[in-house]
Image 1 (cartoon, rainbow, N blue to C red):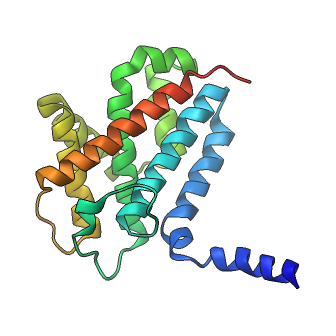
Image 2 (image 1 turned 90 degrees about the vertical axis):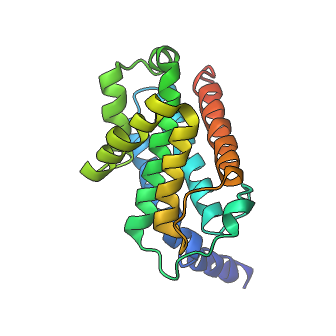
Length: 200
């Protein structure tokens, strides 16, 4: 009986909102990361970024509370959020991550043994970037960062989050920006530390 109940729990987990909205995408990205990785540093880079993005999206959709996004939780979620919207936000956040990670370009390229071109190509392949995702990266996020620094980057990322997830699509408040900035900087710091760990 316990074995049957355990199996049922596993099957039920695949029907859960977390799995349906977020987990299935992360699982796919992680499989692609493992397939593409030529060394441990590459694998750690992509897997850590993937998990960081998943945790944020799950918190924003109020499916998990490991990350505190309390100011944003005051906004009302849309009644229906489609797969495309979740992927748009996932990739926008991943793009914000890669913009900041790229400021430590020499360290990342040396650790992963990639050229800059191969690094960007691999990132887009692992996370299945579409043309619109590249446009968001190039024309919105990268431009915002080069003009206004991390605050500009977070403001644009926050606008994408609000447009896709919330009924109220007004610009982020200073409190919301501060919270997102803390999460993003913490994720980037974690990625950089994890990537440079020596192989065991």
